[in-house]
Image 1 (tube, one colour):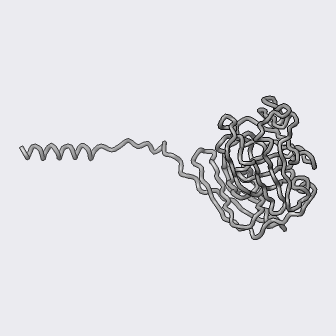
Image 2 (cartoon, rainbow, N blue to C red):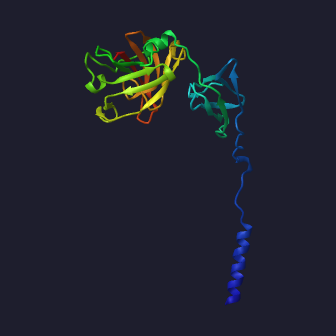
Image 3 (tube, helix red, strand yellow):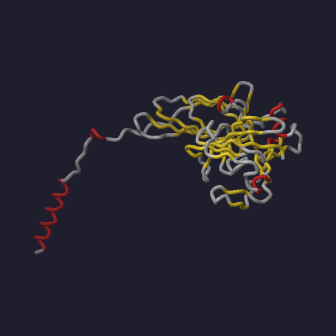
Amino acid sequence: MEKKIFLLMALVVAVLAGCKPDRDDDNQLPDAPGAPQFSVEMVAGDSNRMIIKDLSSGNFQRLWDLPGGTPKNSTKALDTIAYSKKGFYNITLYVSKEDGSGSPSASKKIEILKDAKLACNPKFGLLTGDCEPQGKCWTLTRAPGAVKVGPTYDDFSWYTSPIDGLQNEQYDDGFCFTFDNLVFQYKNNTATVNPWNGYQAEAYDPGISDFVYLEGTGISGRDQILLADNQFVGVWDCDNLLDVVKLTATELVVRGRQRMQNGTPNPQGWFELTFVPQ
């Protein structure tokens, strides 16, 4: 009996040894692409601006991740990035290949040696109250059209606020800009209207942060105001990158993308917001 079992097991082993999985060498996945190549060079005479250039080829798409820089992201093969504060920053380039063979990335660390020095110009003066230490706070106007919403940059057909059409908790909000160290502070008198919670007023304090004023970088060559990711002006669901449509001593008009609660801009939706000095 034992001899029969031994012979049976030997037969099974022989059969299994003779079985090999099918292999099709013509359908192998392509090799993973190598990391992209890029260069970083300082703008001549300006140690706070860097020129980034994608040196790799065969890219179907690219995305630069630029934390701490302005802009924070870019898809251009060649771009200029501004850093307002000294310190170390990471620059990462993500690419996807035309043959679909992967999405490699490469990173470099740079050092900004000093804070950018800014002079008080007329635009800063209008926004910050003549660049005085106390700064300047803006609040939503009570006139019609304080808040306009629409599907595209120039179309605000979805909603236009009437005279005194906002909540009291919105009219007492102050959005304050100070020239020294480019400080931004949202002063909401303890309550903020939450658009993701049925427009109920609730406690919210994002603290004090900095802001960046960019000349000519917006749509149609408009200036832009860039706030920290958790900050906003006017309404909580407006993006933190704003095109300046109008800036005078008595009126500030900006446009920004509508954003979701996680901070991602909606595919459609733009705000136009009008402020007066508080």
